[in-house]
Amino acid sequence: MSAYTISIVSIIGINVILAVSLNMISGFCGQISLGHGAFFGAGAYAAALVMVGLANVPLALLAALLAGSALGIIVGFASLRVRSDFLAVTTIGVNFLFVGFVRKQTWLGGEMGISGIPPTGFGAPGNMVMILVLACATVAFSLYVNRSWMGFAFRAVGEDEQAATTLGIAANAYKLAAFGIGTALAGLAGGLYTFFTQFITVDAFDFIFSVMLMAMVVIGGIGSTWGVVAAAIGLTVLPEAIRFVNDYRLLVFGGMLVLVIRLAPGGLAALIRNLFVRARQA
Image (cartoon, rainbow, N blue to C red):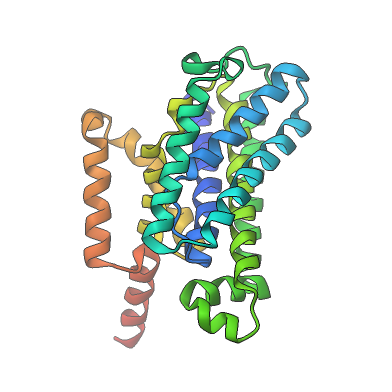
């Protein structure tokens, strides 16, 4: 397997984890987050600091999980007071605050980022396998949560918080749980990204990247794990296929998003499901 293929497969695995983690917040629980890049970045920087100081892979992944989750729970408390559009604006603000904070911190590398991160010792193929294993584990966990009582509570809160509360569901607790779990997984993806690149700058976690992640969720079908996975894979591979129009990449993605919302509001997952039902009826 060539180095280029290993690189693309590794990025696909990281994006799958990120898209699935955002889907647990926005798709399952209905909490619109447009600042997922901040949680991704928190995990990446935490892992980088541990690797530079201790060169311990398991400890770096644990630090990434905890950093993403801690920031997510803090933002989750804000979600208890704001909803829908106001929550989206709040998470956008968190993303900008994170980027601005890191740029001013010399101990985080500032504008130059953190370089010279020690390798994991597994080599590029080994890192790819680790990323794919954790991506598969994340997808399996998402499917399990969706079928569990927690998934039922998430969907109930997302669809009608007042009705869920009437049924005895602690809406605030489940909102915090969604943010805590989703952002912990985003932090995990950040740790894997650090292992993959061995060099990080804050530009990789900006608002544009957060919008790209939300595009994966919406295009795949918000709330659908498999649809989100398919969109994450497709939107990771697509830029490689359209390198000749790389300057217009955001325009292409924006056009795809508009088309999906216009023609298939439920995303690719709903579109494929409807086509399958029509084929059976025919």
